[in-house]
Amino acid sequence: MWINNIIGFIKLPFRKEKELFSALYDILGFFPRDIKYYQQALMHKSIGRRNDKGKPLNNERLEFLGDAILDAAVGDIVYRHYEGKREGFLTNTRSKLVSRETLGKLANEMGLSQLILSAGRSNSHNSYVGGNAFEALVGAIYLDRGYEACMWFWENRVLGKHIDLDKVAFKEVNFKSKLLEWSQKNKVRMEYRMLKQKKDDNGSPIFSFQVMLEGVEGECGSGFSKKEAQQLASKDTLQKLKREPQFVDSIFKAKSDRTKMEEEPTMMVPDPEKEQQDFIISNESGEFETESVEILRPLSSKRAELECATSLEGKSTGIAEGNSKLDEEFDLSDITHKEKSREDIIAEAEAAAFAEG
Image (cartoon, rainbow, N blue to C red; front, side, top):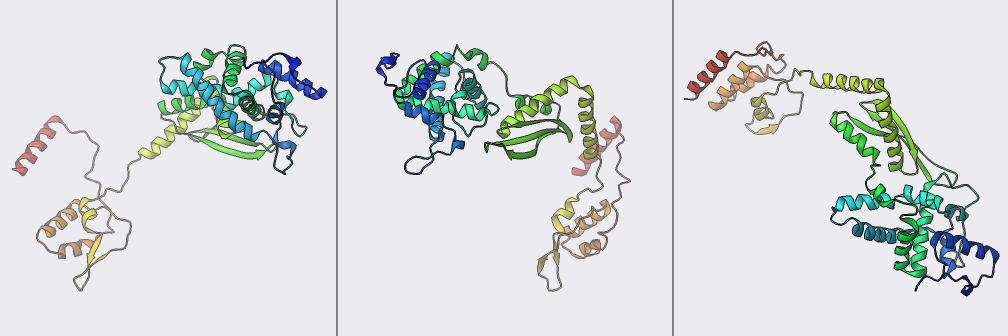
């Protein structure tokens, strides 16, 4: 059996190393074979250590490896546990289990965060440090004992003991998605405005975002990724929508002002004859050239009839005369919003039918 729980077979020359063996046993449920993998998994880049060749010595490479192993192992577990579930559900469940937030909490609860070697600063506030170390630990297990040991660790030391798989799978944690769904349902414009971006004492990036609903300021959120910051801002904004009716009123008032402005009638009505003919003009030599682009004014119905008639006759004089009237205001006196009676509609339809015949 690959798990060897007998400490007598392992030489422990140093007290610190013995303490690390004991601490790792409490976390893993088995003793490491090669302690060097686990020591490197607990080295944060802030300590600035280098190997004999002068290359940085930290847990970033093991973190990369552990991330890939976790995706495979957790994907395997979720696939077998939820038989018949669709790909979207399986992907979402796996994403929740291997998210930085989940892994960071696991690192704290399992005591892994206390073993991380850093530049003397507390990392308890930064879920990335613990989460990255957890991934690096999985990478160390893989190199030390193989894929089977990684599966055993997750199934026996994580699931059931620290994570309720079904609770995670069916819990809605995507506050950004819920806020987007609310805004789309109510036809409210939503965006995330970045307030600032900085780095903490460990060099980790911190992002701050604010939710904007119809230009009305929502809540703010800060995190070690844009996604985390937007999630926190969305969560607090959803709570504000539930608790503060005046906040909701201000959003819909802003929406009403916007839609009123967008729905105001325009005085510019494009003329089909203008669109087809006025982009070219005839010069004295009889050759055609393009006309410079200007603001086009709509033509009156009489002007349209004039151009249509001259076009059918193959003459250009009518168009030339019409061009002198381009700056005239379009007469909208014949346009009305008055509803037509049934008799008017029938009469117009009959007249149109006879005209076509």
